[in-house]
Length: 458
Image (cartoon, rainbow, N blue to C red):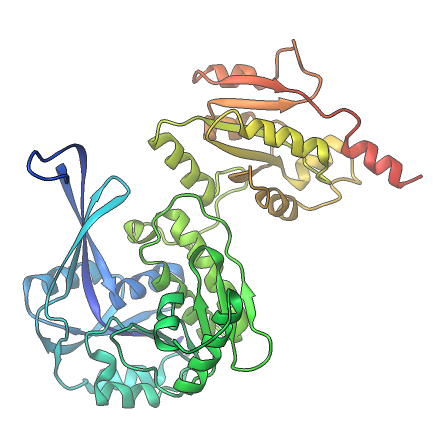
C-alpha cells in the first residue's frame, strides 16, 4: 500500500535575500551604502514549510496553495519542481514577494510586494481529496486569505489525518478539529491578550485560553531559543527546552517547527512526542543556517560519521571564523565530569572566542581505560558538556588520539590540562601543519576520574 503523503495548505510566497557588503554611509543620510549585491531566491511561507518537510524525510509532500500567473509565480514553480507535488488553487492579486536587504548576516530592510489578500478561485477536487486522505495536514497561514475560504475550510474539516495549524495574526482561526496549533509567543499574546500572570504562567494561561477559543486539541506556543510550551487546556503544561544554538538564522524556524510536528504526527507520534521532536528539529534547522540553507541536504539528513563535526560545531566554527575570531579546542574522555574538568574547560574558553570539546567515543575509552569504562556513555557525556555555558560545541571521535578530528576542525589553539608543562604535546605536530598552537593549562590538583572511581570502591 502506498504511504499517504503529508499535505501542506496555505499561502506560498517568494522570498528573496539581497546580500551585499557595506563599509560607508551615504553623504545625505545616516544609512549604509550596500554594494556587491547577490540575489538569492527561495520558496517562502507554506512553500518553505513544504520543502523543509520534503527534505526531512521520505514521505511525499503535497503543497496546495494559490498560484498566480505572474513572474514571481513562474519562479516559485521552478523552485518547487522536483521537491514537492504542487496542486494549484487559481488566484489573482500577484505573488507575494518578500525581499530582505542584508549586509552579511544582518537585515537592513524588507521590501514587500503583492496584494495583501489574494483572490482565490474554487478549490480543485484533486486538492480536496488530497486533504481528506493525507497522513497529516499542515496549514501554513500567512494571512493572504487562503485559510478563510469556505471550500478550503470545509476540506480541512473533513481531513481524516491530524491537522497542525501554524497561525498568522491576519489569518483565519484554526478549524475546530485541529490536533495542534503552533502560535509563537507574540501571536498568542495578541489573540489571548486578557490572560494574566508572568513568565511561563502567562504563556500557559494564553495557551489554555486559545484552546477554549478555537476548540482545538492542543496549543504549542513556540518561545524561540527557550523552546515551546504545550498545553492541552487543563493540567500542568509540558515545556520542551530548546538546545542552545550559537549563530544561525532564525528565519523559517517557525515553519521548520510546524513541519516537524506534522511529520511526527503523520508517523503516529502522540502530540507531546511531536512537539519534542519539533523543538529539536527547529534548533538544528537554525544551527544549519535557517531558511538561507533551504536547498541543502535538509535539517534531518543522514547522520554524520562519528568524529565529524556535528551541525552545531560547524555553525560555531563558521561564525567565529567569519568574524576573525579564535577557535579553541580541547579533548579527553570526560567520564564523570568533576571540578578539575570544569576548571580546565573554563580556562580554555578564555583563550579565544569559542570552545569545541572533542571527546573519546565509548569504544575509544574502553581501549584506553579498560573494559569497565566508560561509566557514562558518549551521548550523555556530550549532553553534560554542552550544558556548560563555556562550551560551544562537542564532537565525538572514535580514534585513540584526537589527531584526525583536529585535522578536520583545524582549531587555532589546542588546550590540555595536566602535567604537560615543558613537554611536547602529542597533538602539537598536527597543530603546526596549519599554524595552530598547542598549550598547557594549570590542572586543579587532587581531582581525577580514576581517583573518584577508586574511592567509590572503598
